Image (cartoon, rainbow, N blue to C red; front, top):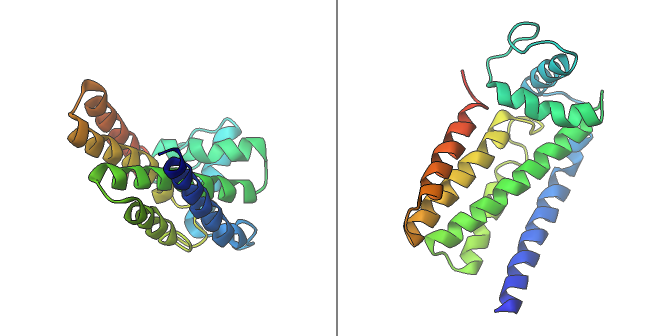
Length: 176
């Protein structure tokens, strides 16, 4: 059993490293995607004490700008850390996609295909890949995992509340 668990973790690490390697050329690309540039501008304005929707405007949810502000605050003026942060966020949600596939009852090999296909969908998704959808999918994937975990083990108050919180949290990325 311990060997099987090590295989799971090694396989997920391999998928994560592979996705990171495939997306690595995007991290240093000089071209700005339209959405990426607007999100970067609004987040940078917020860090300079501007208010989203008042001093800089875009129609996405407020959480997106504060998520973008994290790497911008640590590495000001550079887009690369934001793109790396986006890839790491994608890898996090891939883990929840894997866990959801396992909760549904997929065998290990089939459960690995789910995050692999999920990751491949975002290699060039949305231009350079700092799209709001990638950040939104973390709480969505958590909500789905909690739902299927509850279906398998019986819904408890924490799975039901967690689902509501996760799905509600997702809307703060894409309010329109």
